[in-house]
Each structure stands twice: as C-alpha cells, then as structure tokens.
Length: 393
Image 1 (cartoon, rainbow, N blue to C red):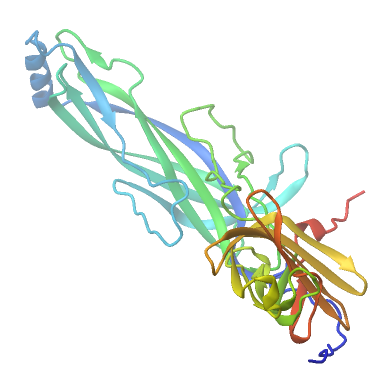
Image 2 (image 1 turned 135 degrees about the vertical axis):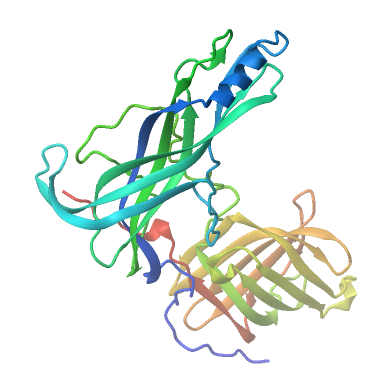
C-alpha cells in the first residue's frame, strides 16, 4: 500500500481557542451600597397596656421582653432569571431624576451626575412576649426613609433598587420587670440597600469581578457593622473551569508497525482535547498481527482516561508533535497504561503507541508508524498564557 501524500498547510488554530468575542450583557453604569437608619416612637394602646400589666402581675410570666421581627430579604446573588419578590418591604423612586454637578472625593474635580430620591419602606412586627415565649400583645407598624442619591444615571439606563437586609432593634427598655407598663418605646430600623444603574450593551471584553464604590459624594455614612459585606459566591477552581489543552489531536490513520517484536498493522482513532478541553476525549487503536509465528494475537485498545499533566505540544520540523499519556483496557480485558505520540508535518505524518503494565514495563510497542491511509490533524490552542499584556508606563 502506497503512501498517501498530504496537502501542504499551515498549523491551524482550534475553533475554541481564546479569541475576541462579542457578548450582550447588562453594563453597570453605577453601583452603590449604603446603610440607612430611621428611628420612631411606638406607643401602646390602653388595651395593650392592660394586657402587659396583667402578664407582669403573674410571677410565672415575668420578665416580659419586647422583640421585633423584620421582613426576610432575598439573597444578595439570586440565581439568574429568578424573581424573588419580598413581602413587607419596598424600594421605589420618587419623582424624576435631576441633573446636578458634584465634587468628586479626593480632590478629583467636578462631574455631571443625576440626583434621585428613593423611598425605602418596611412593615415591622413588634411583640411583647413572656418568659415562656408566649405573645402578650403585638404592634404592627410601618417604617420608611426617603434618601437622595447622586448617581451616574444617564438617559437610556435603568435603575434597580434592592433592600438586601432589614435590621430591627430596640435601643433600650426591651425587658419589662414591674408595673407600671411603659406607654411607648423607641424603635430603630436599619435598611441595607443595593442600588445599580444598568443598560443592555454589546461588549468585546476581558473581565474581572468589580466591587461597589462607597456612597461618598455628598454625605457621610453612619458606621454600622450589621450589614453584610458584598461577597461573591465561593469559586471552585479545582472543579471548574478545568484548564484548557495546549493543542488537539483528531483523525483516523493507519500504517505498518515499525517494530521487530510487534510486527503488524495498526489503525489509530483519536479525538483528544476537542474544543481545547480534555472533556469527552477519545482514543482507540486496532492492532492486526501479520506475523502469527510470534504467538501474538490481534487486539483492540480503548483509552479510559487521559492525564492532562502529561500533555505536550512541541514544534517538530515544520509541524507539531502531540504527546499524551493515560489509561485504558484491551479487548482481552487487560488494563494497560498508554503513551501516545503523533507528529504532523506539511508532507508527512507519524504516530507511535506504547502500552505498559502495572510495573511500568512496556508490553506493546508499535514503533514509529508512518501514516499510509487516513489523516491526523494537530490544531494549536490559544489560551490565557499566550496573551501578552501591554504595561502602562
């Protein structure tokens, strides 16, 4: 069987290599987090005072406590597409935005921005409970705070306002020991808010996580520590994403084994690192023994696993050399490790396969097989390590 010539070609680039991409995303024009506090006086009715004094007259129910329940807010990072509407709280824009000019912090000059008024409201449940946890009386009240924000909020963008946490507390007087009952108490409510200005755009980007700026344009924050910090979900780099391959090997090719001990013909099927990912990689070969006197038999070998740490892509002449190791099983049920090397040049192609037993001894060696039928392709993968960043001076 004669050698099949191969057309002259340059080393191609795999289809899933790192390259410029255009994506449609929600661009964040501004992102502000803040903590807003409001205090109000809550008064008991005559009927509620009577219930409290009756409970305090029973030693088995003393002491009484005033507790406050705040509405539960959705998680900071809900799943994409989920619409988690909270009950008992609301954030809404009041009136129209106004163009303003503001001084940037740190002596950064002035900037044009937009001033918006946002109203935050929440329904609170305040209860008086005895030492057994039984409710003596309860008060339902509504709290709200109106706050002005200076934002980058140009025409064509949308404002999204979320309440990420509501904290309700009673600064003092939470424990009631003796008569007479207090007629009122002070309630403090803290709103943890997240405000973003967004618009849908088309971008060609390389990206990283960004963090919100402080709300520092025209007023000072109260230093509360109850609000949760903005934390991105924990990443799993060992699980996903997996590292990409340096190159790919694909195709079907056959030729005569160049080995005295394992004379015969071998046909290789390979699809390794398709889309520059080791996932779903496949490799098998069929060996046909042309010398029956050596007692060896025909067999098929199928790879069951690939060791990406052994993958090498090297320049070889005017082409590339692909090297990979892994594990597999023969059609006789023998588990064997393998070493595979393939060379693709402009005019010629070769491959070589070794099988090893559990002691690392070579039990099959195809020798250097020149491709006579079929064709192999080695495609170069471009990954992040290939990028060169221009440093700013």
